Amino acid sequence: MIDIEDRLTLDERASVDFILGLRKRWSDAVYPALAQEFAATGVVADSVEQANETMRTLPSYPWFSHLERVQQKMLWRTAGDAVLRRRADLVEVLDSAPTHGLGSIELNPDLDLPGWYTDYDIHVQPGSFFSDDMSAYVYEFGARIVMLRDNDGYKFHSLFAQTALPDKPEATTVVDIGCGFGKSTRPLVAKYPTAQVVGIDLASPGLRLAHAEAEALGLPIDYVQGDGQSTGLADESVDVVTGTMVLHEMPTEAIVATLTEAARLVKPGGEVHFLEFMLTGDLLRDASIVEHADRNNEPFFRDLFATDTVAALEAAGLTDVRWRPFDERNLGVRPEGWGERPEWHFPWAVLSATKPATKPATKPAGEAVA
Image (tube, rainbow, N blue to C red; front, side):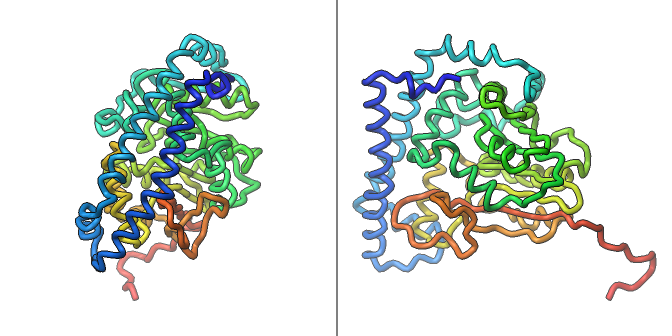
């Protein structure tokens, strides 16, 4: 496989380093200054909306908001130019991957992509993730900078697999909904080495890159182009269903449909786990997260925060439904909370649930319920 970063020119490398440095200082210098100014106002906000109103009056706010949007645009321009300069070589890599090798890829050119998925350039990435074979390469490259190089090697996803997912040596099938270019699916092979691992996504560019990279790494993963709301897989056929950073990119009705589908797929005794984002209770931080979503062309953050995901999974028959904070630095699932962190960070959290191993006994007709 070709790693674009290994082929960067000196000027391209300088651009990447500048954007990375800008993003780091935005996170660890500008945001703490904003938080200090917020505290100095003495305002005790009682809602995210009120915190947002106060935040917008602060001297550092114009810098905070402007730098976030500007560095994101700079990121995609740099990543896009670097990828497109090498388009011929990258397409050759995608085309050379066998359809059926260690794993497989099944594309559906007739799949109807939902409007809520195609109507936005998500993350401000021109053309988003689905529009061109190169869009997956651009996103893979750009995501390294978005995560401040802390997710190189997909550390976050490995931590998720290690600390959130159950040990199930008997597992035969594991499904990853919204697998993108495969970064979330690969750690599942190490976690469940004897199971069939299936990645499902709406976007064929991401699946093509995921499949090519999995084959190059010797990982037997089956990738399928499909909708996580209706996968077409059999009822109660999956031991573990996962999803990573996918629910916040859906409107409420799609979130509920995806959770309901995950509950349908999982076997009795099986589990569902989604690595996502959740409000922290720190109102300034939460206000900045909501504004991040708006500036980053991710309008459905608000839908996720407003959706009763626990009730949706319980209504689908799952139990032990809970959200748990997730520390992406090195701890993974952290039930006691995110802890004190002065820098701006994503409020990672894991939504988990279990399908009861045995179904509750039904009451005979006419019997009174205690």
